[in-house]
Image 1 (tube, rainbow, N blue to C red):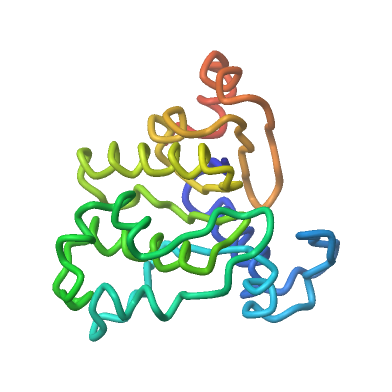
Image 2: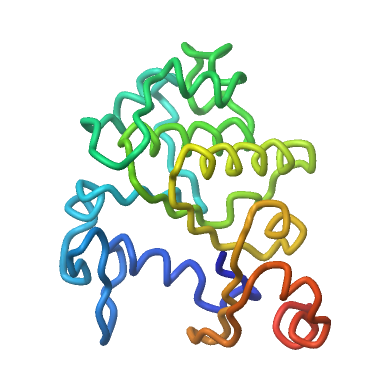
Length: 203
């Protein structure tokens, strides 16, 4: 879990991992390969999924069509997803298969974006601010979804400002400030450290 205030560099880190932003220096490795000079589609084909903060669904396409856009072949050492399995994970989507993305609520669009990414059968997934702008009841549902993905064996890296949400889903926390890692530890350790939370996360 990447935590930090607005503008700390969490989203830029995510975009660097998926190839949308080129790092000025250093190395990024995924699936045993250096990827910092690869194109985003090449990194995705290695099994890294990315759910952007802006969601970016295709508003003119319905749920099933959006899912088909994300389809990739199954890969070893990764959960295998089909539309039917995804509808078990996101029952709301299963009830609106023919609904255009532009006629869905923000929470439904967020679920669709995650489901579309899972159709690529990734071995790891990046979730950028998944609770941003969602109603509390949807945030709780999102937390249950992420815990289920972890049980499926999927590696999940999130960026968040919502500490409560982070505590529900994360095992480890990394606090980012001005593009630098300022703290790393278990989520339980962070929850018990008032001084660190006050220094880096209070607003």
